[in-house]
Amino acid sequence: MGSAAQKADGRGVAGGDAPEPMFDLIELLFFAYRDFVGDPDRLLESIGFGRAHHRVLHFVDRQPGLTIAELLDILRITKQSLSRVLKELLDQDYVEQRAGVSDRRQRLLFPTAKGRKLAQDLADLQTARFVRALSPMGPEARAHAIEFLLNMIDPAEREKVAKLVWGEIPQLRHRSAT
Amino acid sequence: MGSAAQKADGRGVAGGDAPEPMFDLIELLFFAYRDFVGDPDRLLESIGFGRAHHRVLHFVDRQPGLTIAELLDILRITKQSLSRVLKELLDQDYVEQRAGVSDRRQRLLFPTAKGRKLAQDLADLQTARFVRALSPMGPEARAHAIEFLLNMIDPAEREKVAKLVWGEIPQLRHRSAT
DNA sequence: GTGTTATGTCAGCTATGTTGACATATCTCA
DNA sequence: TGAGATATGTCAACATAGCTGACATAACAC
Image (cartoon, rainbow over all chains, first blue to last red; front, top):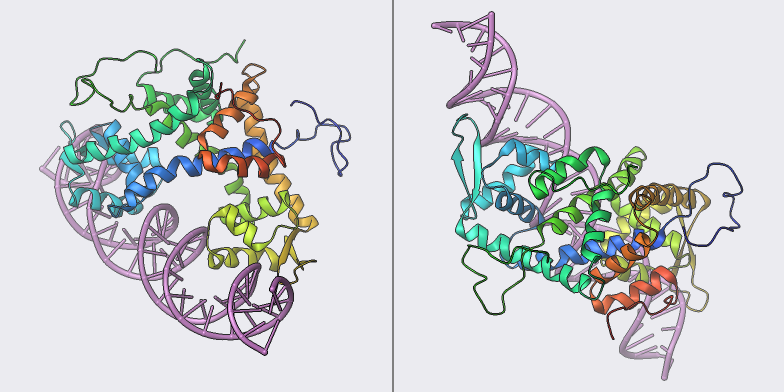
């Protein structure tokens, strides 16, 4: 870390201690995330939806044809939690189901035109915030933010997330290993 | 944005449209935040606490002598929500109250030794994740992450957050206004 | 001494997660 | 072809953490 090597509390004298707590990053990430979800929250509330609906719609929009099992794996919630929210999205024509082609037990999820519109509006709100955050920074700011956020994810999850985000991994992005 | 100026859907022909959705940043922030709070969640669960307890303890630990009103303002929750969680922290000796000195209606909140220990353990978990994320990146990665996250916060809130995080604002950090 | 403020508390509601148990349709494979 | 595994649905009950509204108390301010 930068400076601050001296401290007067009970630790940090010598030996393998924890590094200085990064209170700034901890708190900034807390507030940044709150505002990041705040924009969508307001729009969703106006149509009687919540964050849970947002997550489901987002991933269905991004991965049309997603199965229930895949969605549960991405969201890491139980099927009972998912079903309440998904039922509302289906009933109100934001999402539709079709039977799987090779396996007719599967329910493939697709956004309707109405669902794609809402998903796009929500993504636009969040994108606008990223644009406002990054535009006053250097040209590499976006790449740095992507690398930083990817590195914040559990290493065991990164490949799965990268596949979900970019399809089939863009180019192995570790400045690390060497 | 990098490339991708052509698109085939119904928009983006000309005129002041929204920019391309930044799905990568949207999803990476979602997963990064989930893992960021996942470490504390597991520790908290082992002692019967939840995220709400974490937030309260964190800010009491960081701002000893915080009043109820100030805490409500930081967390943006109602006093009824706060009171349930705070009561448990008080009952179990993680936090203690003292009457305000100049205004005895106020309840000043302080962490106990036990509370400081827990707050530190939680902060250490989150700090370790930041260290793992930043160490394979360049020496300026931390400063970039701080600037990025601060810029993600609502402009109207930034000064308040900066004061909370650094005390009295370090040095005006806008590469933006030129 | 009256009105405002800081806080506490009771009661009930909502959103979103959980577990456990069981039902149904479909697939797979011996 | 039939038995077992799999994908999904559903019922019921519960937990956490937010909310609103109403009312109480103590201490401050003028």
